[in-house]
Length: 174
Image 1 (cartoon, one colour):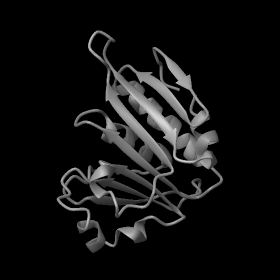
Image 2 (cartoon, helix red, strand yellow):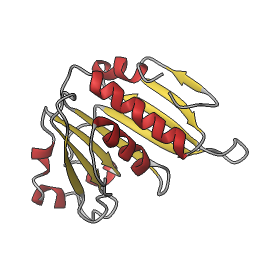
Image 3 (cartoon, one colour):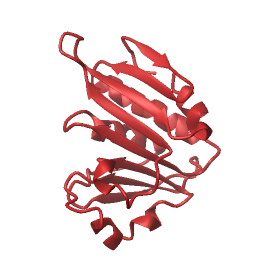
Image 4 (tube, helix red, strand yellow):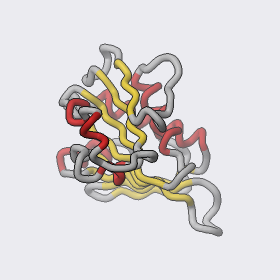
């Protein structure tokens, strides 16, 4: 678990203070380890936050820890990048979506977006609100916020299970 100034946990959510980029990478490693231990194959994770909040840093750490080798590109212009996962992960494939430049959610229909949300995929979606109404529902929401002025540097990260089925998974991150 990353070094945190504070953390709290409720039945369906966890709040962490992540002080810097290396700690955000460690959080990504913890999330990947939890995904690897998960008995359910697939998982849809929505990443919320302003520009520069750390969504891509967190996503890259998750994918690298899941076993993705080589360069992990940000799909800012392509909208999605696929990655094959090694045999030690229940899911067979991961998809990284970055919807920042999406003009209309209907554009996702042309990509065949529904095919990406299979039961054997880990799907990480940055800027999911831009695909609202077209994307599959999330299993987990990760909200990354800049710390309030005077609260010190870093980010506050809130990880919430969308349903009780994933609440144990979120609690395992502490």
